[in-house]
Length: 291
Image 1 (spheres, rainbow, N blue to C red):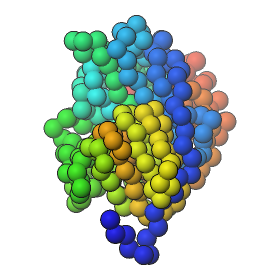
Image 2 (image 1 turned 90 degrees about the vertical axis):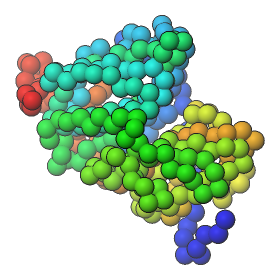
Image 3 (image 1 turned 30 degrees about the vertical axis):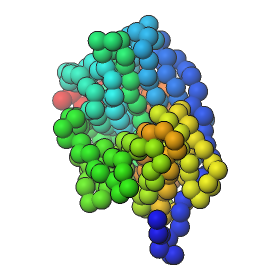
Image 4 (image 1 turned 180 degrees about the horizontal axis):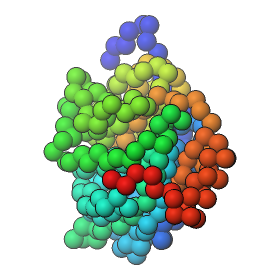
């Protein structure tokens, strides 16, 4: 492996341990980061890992609830999520698929997980912030089917399913997003090095969901299943699998550098904007776009 001398390998800023929590009507999940870590992950707000083989831990789901000011990105690996919203949209997010929902000015929806025939269900939900100028845009969906996400063969072995961003000249199907994200599902066989170029000023992190890996140049810094590695500023990310295969989400985005005012699933820039949203929920004027 040879890197240009004028390029800087991203060092590890911090390794976060995901922690169990219960959300919705009783869904057991692991939270990799959330409210208490703002603004370390700017422009991202939260990452949840929901994997379970116990239907009692996921069937209660996420009944009707509002969103405003953010985008939610759901990526499924096992089982499905049935969804519906106040605009009349409904459908299923199936294994290998992504739903990119831009809440914008406001939407009320529900997400109800369903396990596979063996009762297994698993996936991730990432929250991305919207800049102040786009907080009240019309809501929209991007449904990304399994066949839309290309698997790119990596130098030295392994594959990357590219949802957004670019790997080896292959671009993901999700484009024209204001935070210029890169999101990919990387799967490495044992003893394989992943080397990926990044935009120096973008926020970059990886979430490991299977196996464990070594993060260079901190050769002894290991991260395991359920760990999130946040990187410092730099040009390249270098990750090595160990004696077993390694699977992780690679995520990056352009920071917004804006104030964050957070009330549950509503994220704005000021407390006054949150107060308006809460008042609108009470008087049934929250939804601005009728479809």
